[in-house]
Length: 526
Image (tube, rainbow, N blue to C red; front, top):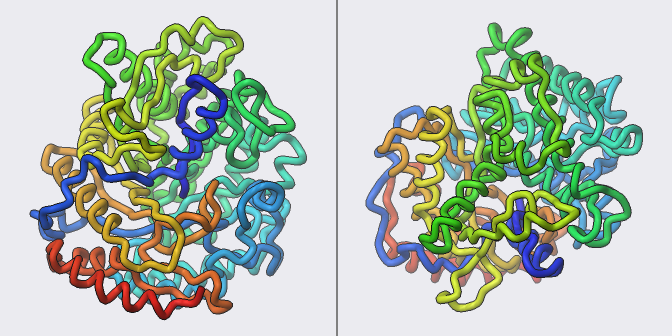
């Protein structure tokens, strides 16, 4: 998943959009704060016996078969064909190669595979008749996973709303989405819930809302000046808050349906996923410290506060005013405690600098309301467009959630590092990144965090949200120049496999293995 946003209304629109791309693209970095010279001091045995390790993808990014067997376009298809670098028409062709991919998961030692269902493959008209071939595909994939001892963790929405619903009533901007999303979830629970125990309603809800409706960088690409470029419609001052509200109501409705209709028989769990930075004050000035808490309230509390407490943070309501919808008493009751777990996508740490002067500007978008500048480097660090990598941010993020929200059950749904897309299998930097972040996660567990699982992003190189095929996060390289889309294990797959199977791999062994990877990579087609 390519890390969008969160960037910053700073100085100029150009800066905003660049930062936005970086954040969603994530995940890329120079490793300035990683301890990369020492081998792991932990093993899988240090984690609880029931702790889940996995890896993930999403439907549009890997399935392909975009026009096969009744699937209709999603908003992601539309934007990718119109503006993005490449598209997901074929992608990794997992629609036809799922058995091969599941065997790779077995070889890797995954406990679980996180993937999403394509709404427009399952219900091509967005509502109404269910596509039998869509049901068959997901049954085949789920059954293949189960038969190989791998748990399916399923996301219902990952940026790919059926285009027909966007055209009919504006998609997530309309309250009509709540009913249609709930009906879609009902089909998923009914058809697959006997084998799927973990359901995530919306992936990275805060990124989807800000990227899609504030800066206009991701589907459906809505925004307004001066907060975004090249949008043909939208209102950055109001739409993000409306869409976030509808996302929470749709999540709560689907969760309530599951709990009342299915949970007693299926014994599963429902959660919502957000993107999570660890925020660090740029200085110890009171203003920067206060701005850091404000950033947490806007980025994190915007979604988690309603789930835990039944309403938005006071600072958000105060600063946004009438532009943010209010929950009725009934809605507040439904949203509160509508989760069995919270999914977090965490990649990196950023600095926060107070920007209170921006709050006097009109019009205001999310970032102006927040009045905090997100900075991806300190002045003392060599200039880089990439955010810092600070593995302790994983531990600190989880401990913040534990203290602020009463230690809810957590799954780390995405964590990984981007590298340029090429034929190199020698991703030593990704190995060191994963080693450091998993170690930081273990520190949080030892301090009492109720984190129950960890998934790398991504299992395969795939079609990234903003960067297309130009960057990669995968444990497995996919040769997109090969008609057969052959998969090759990277060094990170070798390291993760050995970790999952209980064998520690020292940095020296990683370096020795990398020599073999370089030799193997020379045989990949170009």
